[in-house]
Image (cartoon, rainbow, N blue to C red):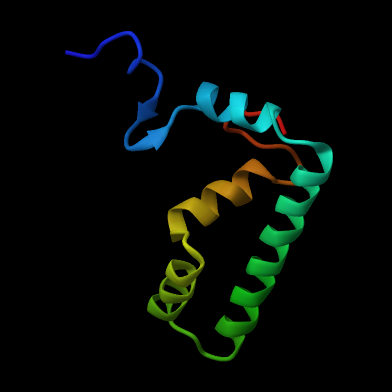
Length: 91
């Protein structure tokens, strides 16, 4: 049985949107901008590697070296989408 502290903490193995929102709200505008720029750099690198013939396994290995998963990268792309995200979290 879940206790009150556990409710809202995780959804399907991922942190719930309300917990993520609280953490994002703590970030400064410059930290948010730095995160956007880092995401763009990672995406550009992946696109370059794919153009050079890298496989999905190669990309996953690179991301693992960076300490993130493909699922986390996809989530970050949705979160920082230029047209606004659809996951209910405000940046």
